[in-house]
Amino acid sequence: MSEPVQVMGGLTDADFRRTILRAIRLTAVVVAVALPLVWWKLGWQSAVYLVVGGGISASGLYEWLRLMTAVMRRMDVETMGEPAKVRPMAPVLIGFFLRMGITVVVLYVSLKTLNGSVYALAAGLALGVFSLSVEAFRMMRLWTV
Image (cartoon, rainbow, N blue to C red; front, side):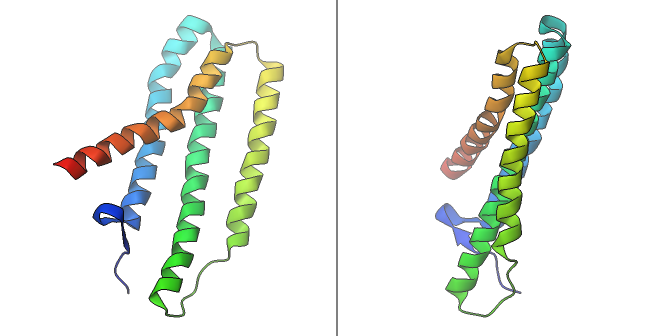
């Protein structure tokens, strides 16, 4: 079995995978912590908006991880020059575009049927960027120590 490929700064593909998985976990934790507060202050519809936005953020991070992993495996095979079995890209791309379509439908249905605060939905959608930023700062801190 080959060693993990190191990318910038001595990080491996496995390090990037762990980083994205930690960002997904952080998104879920923030939603779980903020949910009772949003429910209490803004109502159950806004709490549902927060869950929808957080779910979309987490699924976007997961799909990005799948897409990045598939591309990196293809690049690893080409650089090592050895014939290896690589999963086809079609299922990953189909899943990516299917998730985008489902996201549009979920957003449309939730906006049409619920009368909550759209700010809760925006906050949930922004959680993916927030979680990735927190993980990026953690990685930068590790590089400087």
